[in-house]
Amino acid sequence: MPDPPKFYPALSITNVKSLIPITLDTECGLYNSWVTLFMVQARVHNLLHHIIPPTEEKAQAAVAASKAADADLFGRLDVVVLQWIYATVSSDLLQAILVKGDTTSQAWQRLEQVFQDNKGSRATHLEEELAAVKLENFSSTEAYCNHVKSLADRLADMDAPVANSRLVLRLVGGLPSAYSGTVDYVQNQDPLPSFESVRSRIKLAERTMKHHAAQDSTGAALLMSTGGGTSNGFTDGDTNPEM
Image 1 (cartoon, rainbow, N blue to C red):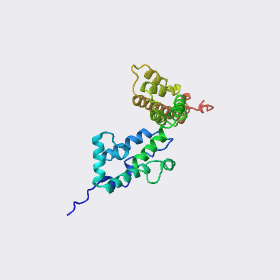
Image 2 (image 1 turned 90 degrees about the horizontal axis):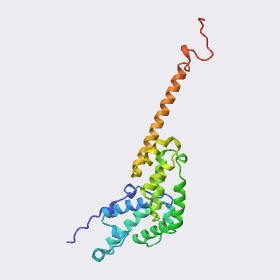
Image 3 (image 1 turned 180 degrees about the horizontal axis):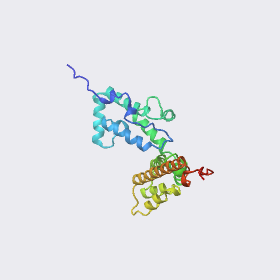
Image 4 (image 1 turned 180 degrees about the vertical axis):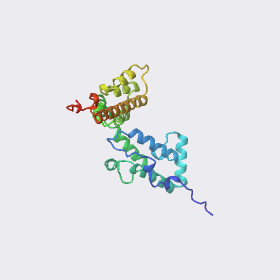
């Protein structure tokens, strides 16, 4: 009696986006994050060799033996991982890498080329954008900090990583004068705090300023409702009827 077929969880995944919640796009600056999440899933299901063929002799022999033992299953699993790639990239990027009869490793290499080509010119453009970024161009400190981090991640993709100290100084360098206290605090630290620590301090400063602004607004409204702050409880232009 033949052995029952083995169950492979990877074959039952119907919504890979719930596991890799990033849609890769050439403009999003999330290539490193996407790769990290994708490789986690490949490791969980023991399918990393479909993405990056092993170079060690022992690992190569194991992959070859697995393929020889059940070539059909090996091919199905390869297509499953290929589907994961296709499902988690933008439509424009999909058109750029889609090739009939592709294997997972070929599609992976093609994606890598899209994000690694012309690294020098791309890095230069990103450096210029990072140097010019300012909080005033964003709706919140959260959006500002996320954009700065995204630029740093994209520079890392271009083999031009930004050191924490430089990233922190650039982050506070784009803040307006209202954040001068935060800027002075950060710049006087030795060594400089981490990017995440500075991000938290900037967001705290934003919340504090909003709270103070709300209090001032409430106080002004209360003052107006009680007569505009004139003495004896009379508004400007009123006279005491008893006089």
